[in-house]
Image (cartoon, rainbow, N blue to C red; front, side, top):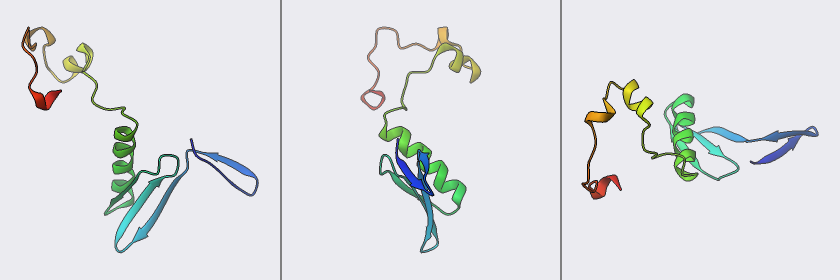
Length: 89
């Protein structure tokens, strides 16, 4: 994670947030990933998503528990021996 210091205090995982031309800009210092949003909350939420994509933390196959939480019966929703479409690869 990123490290910076101010007044001899150490900070890990630094995020910078500022206004620019009517937008909020959010930057993860460690990765360099930068996003924007109309509000601070949206800019930070966008940053969370972008950093996850950058670090390849998204796109996992859902677990049976996650499917059941969405009201999907895992046993009734399989591809069988079929290959998934290219868009899902």
